[in-house]
Length: 61
Image (cartoon, rainbow, N blue to C red; front, side, top):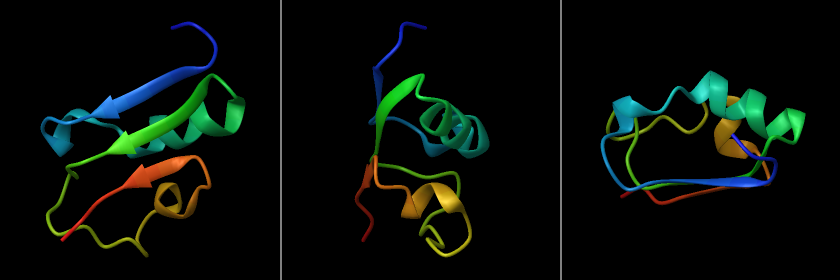
């Protein structure tokens, strides 16, 4: 993966490893993450640090 990659997931939430996403953001490998779906619906946004990361955009209903 190239530096400054932007991850956009518009598919199934189970395809994204939230721990790996957070690690990529913290290391600078990923520029940002955009999530439309989550491993568990509805997401418990207090359950994982990725949801409070400044470089993560997400939408949940």
